Image 1: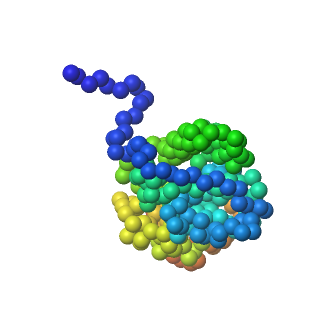
Image 2: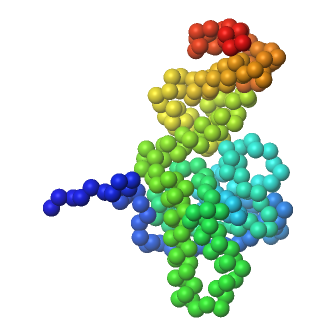
Image 3: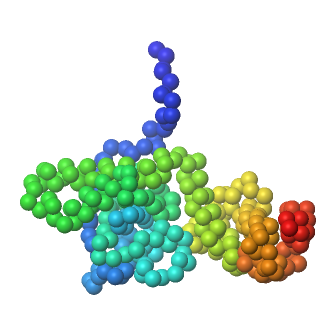
Length: 289
């Protein structure tokens, strides 16, 4: 019997990458432990919430973030500066923010592709995330208080299926090994882009921020000329070139532009710039004018 080809636009995923049947209980716990950007009195330390086998999902009316890495600083003051890798998934903590905790081992049993990923963010104002946030909000408010145990268990099971669906969509179903690599690579590059102006940015600092080894970081940039450092240098040079040919920056000294994009030394910039663009920074500016 000849297998028919899938409809146009549909994707075929290996079964091993999808959620497996719920053999273990996720044991969801929903709470509203935040007030004015801080944990309320009597709650555990924010850095320890995801330990002891728990995965933590922070939800507000617009965003959600799944934390599996127990070394992550899960929750922060909403006024804190954006200096850490996890804070690119920033959720403003207030009294309406929800915390959904599930059994980490059970979640990984159902979605093994999550293992080793940095925090996964998703929308809660559209798509399946809307249903997840609404269900958690209703449950936390006690909507099932007078329901039977059977009804409660059935609805909790549906909610956990919604969580799995939400996470699958957040990863764009890229749950293969290559997909996980692309997801990590995307997040790391976004982290670097936000910090190109920092002259002290190094592969070691980036790896430490993401809780991975330097070797794992270099593997994410395998094939890039110069690996991580080469990619950082290339992006800085491209930004500098863009400023040099931008009329709005025509009065800015080249040294100022260099410093703005992470170069401490104008001579070093000139040498690297010529290697990439076959001209000096000054020549690039004159050519554009």
